[in-house]
Length: 162
Image 1 (cartoon, helix red, strand yellow):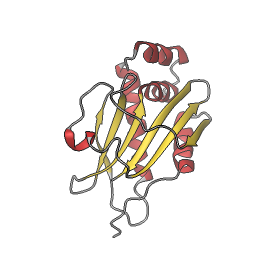
Image 2 (cartoon, rainbow, N blue to C red):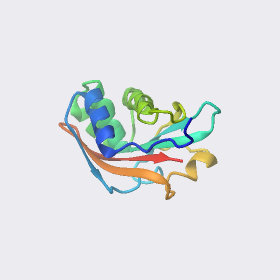
Image 3 (cartoon, rainbow, N blue to C red):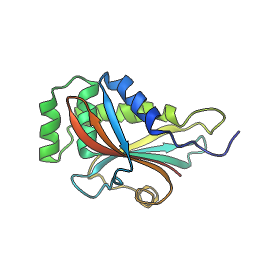
């Protein structure tokens, strides 16, 4: 078994998201790092291996979590805009975007790489444990993306492999 979890390519991420939301999704690399303490916070997916070791993180800034959460469930775009304006991610949008984070585990589980699963999702403004918080802005293998979901708008995402 390989000891390296792969960092997915931006194309793989985009194709997965398009398949899930049923809309065009554009991604641009070299976006800003998603910082969970700025601009309303971020939804953070924590991925662990079979030994429960922290192995990867995926962060959606609040606008992207709201827009992806709305798009996957065909919720009107206005609901996502309200969440962004009020800087509050409603439970239904949070659950929907958390499901996207869950499916994203497939991007790490390729070839003979260690099997990862989504362990925990932290919602915007929810405190992150120290072992997670220390990595979100670290210079590790990472993919920082500017994202636009057709008909819903923009946001940013960060995918980190530790």
